[in-house]
Length: 195
Image 1 (cartoon, rainbow, N blue to C red):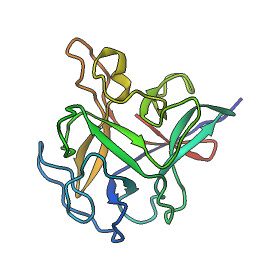
Image 2: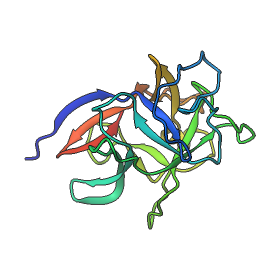
Image 3: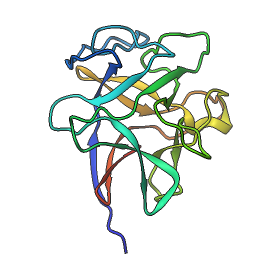
Image 4: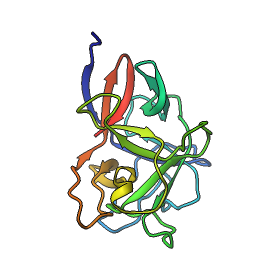
């Protein structure tokens, strides 16, 4: 029997542009305002970013990992080493004409610094790996908002002086999805993102 250590951690984070070397918090704006990176610039589509936890001692950036001896799907996980930036990623707002990522707006998240055979690098919610746990994995679909892609949409909200990732899709008017903050679940020593 596998023991799962349930250590739920809130994951307030900073958005770091690839060219940014500083690591200070930027005060989050009110709803509908642009999400800002650590340099105070609006987060844009088509630009690579790293997601890092706010504060020291909270681990490093995000990447993918396998759990329970399965390579499909791969889970989104956090590096335990706080000096590790993780893998770069991009955001795609639900409105394809929008080039700025805004607070509390549906978006896809995808890793851009890797290629995974037989899978996309778009994030999605998965309940197959650990029943009754909503893990964040890769293998989602970019765009195409609606009932079929409900698990592929995330939001960025304010959390104190930083941001948090949220799963609460609004891309389907007739759907009633569950909502929750993205946190960290420790699964066999790996820090896995889940709702």
